[in-house]
Length: 297
Ligand SMILES: [Zn+2]
Image (cartoon, rainbow, N blue to C red; front, side, top):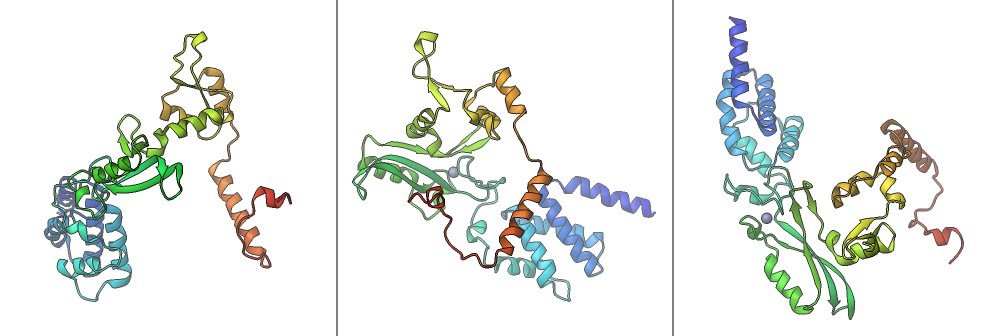
């Protein structure tokens, strides 16, 4: 009998608890049920109501809010769903628009800032051109609303208006907008694609232009494998980002790069913190530049 009961509860969970957020809700309800002597029947009846009520709220936020509720708010009586919801909506960090979004709407890939697409709406813009306030060619960064359906609901200025406004300031300015790159599965920062960024990499000797005498396209960029960045900690990431493949001898050096393992890194951090903590007489001041330390300036 007991076994049957257990397996039907398990069966119910297998059928109904699918996502990470489902698990968060179930855990919260199980906690309430345990605390107030309710059984699985009560959990099953409340579960779909909770799912519906908190559908639009990001999982990480819900996890934190439920945890705080259990730790700090839990009344001595069994709270109803509206009471729980009210406490959560009254939190200072609750974002009002979570409830004005339709259940089936999501921020687009280009502007979402969480895994579920319930937060986002912002596009970063990089501008390199004439800046009137500085009266010279310079960099300028700003943000605008995304042009997707949910992004438009935000109160910042719309993407196209912002781009047109920047274009009017300097027609020949270089302008880039952040976006989601499907191939590398990441958000691309607008500055990454700017000519000055590429030029800086060439100046630093990380990349070089093609050599026509070697049958290379002089407009294309190639990695300078001698540069230590390729065999440093971010070498692999850089190759993936730019679509380069390490030649075997570089890969060999990359694999041999000096590395601190996690435990060592943690110990170093603790040591450093102790050292800083002990130095009670040290006046709090801005970090010194290398030139200051060497007495140069
Ligand atoms: Zn968007």
